[in-house]
Image (cartoon, rainbow over all chains, first blue to last red; front, top):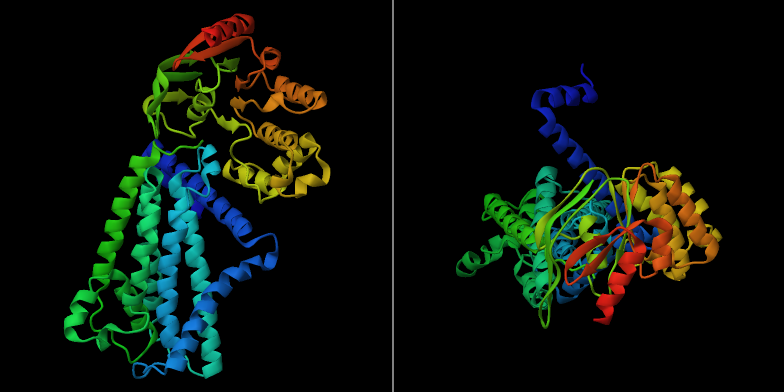
Length: 278
Length: 218
């Protein structure tokens, strides 16, 4: 059995100095991202070790709010789904998506002073924020759904892998869109202003309160343009054994992720020279 | 060695483009201490940020071998809501240094007592300078970029900074911005004067100071 170090050194020999440079660059980039994440947990959640709990509380409060509203409104739930898990599988992926957009969009403007260190670039700020948000929400998801399973004595979780894929897609869509806002925000104040009005309606059309299967045919075709709807569908298809999500198209979501990332990264390169540190 | 090739830096302002550096080319030998003079807005801090790779030039390139520090000054780098210790921890991590060593060295150098464990926003400018300078000295750079920071603080601190830097003169160079000619004289022999977006290098601080003053008067 060869150790990891041996494998790396054999790769180094095989691919030469370029590979060594790439590997070292990547290693230091990972180091920077980890340092940024640790720092962010401190600045965002405060001095207290329990501070991180606040990150968990926010999405929990949102989920319960909608749960209460829908209980009072007495809205019908798709057959075979518990009301609470129905809401949570919609609210959590959506909130992960929209929070990631917001956090990533502000990544550079709220950490400008860190760009004094040459190894910290906009892309590291973006990755660290997106990763922290995703990790937080996956923890929240496990916590909320686990608690619900204990309370209701029922655990669906049909395909865990699909649930994770859905959450990661929510994070990736949010990161791509956030990166675009982040880059545009460096050259214009318009980007920040349109972000809210653009995102708010998304909440109502992304399948938080409905499933694609339950929509009338003519409405569904239009709604399915929205990749975030596909994300909530993926999560629900993975969670509930009796929900098939007949209209979900994971490939379509991946195209969106790739497209947003491409546009975002091109814009980031374009504005990199224009970021004003003073 | 540090080489600047045809550096131009233009900032977009609301009243149109502002050319701060214009086709500036310079070659500086390794391990030399060089001062930077120039009136306000001449581009001294901009030059340091470009050399430190914190900001990209609009055109041109910077070539250097060896590790260059970040521009050590008041403006950037520290987060006010984190303590001095936490800020040091972060910097040690991103430079892949021994974290405990860096923290200990900085704490000893800064001599700010329990404030080291308080949020940086509660610091006076002198205390900030102590931590910033101490931290940069705890990491081995081959070129230190210093922006005004040694001009603050009391005599003892300034003496200490100088002693710490003299100790590594064999290994490291310095590019130092200051309005205070005396401070520059303590560290540097040669000096750059920035004027109208270009740089002229003088062999003594006195010559540079005279040149800089005549430009200000003009």
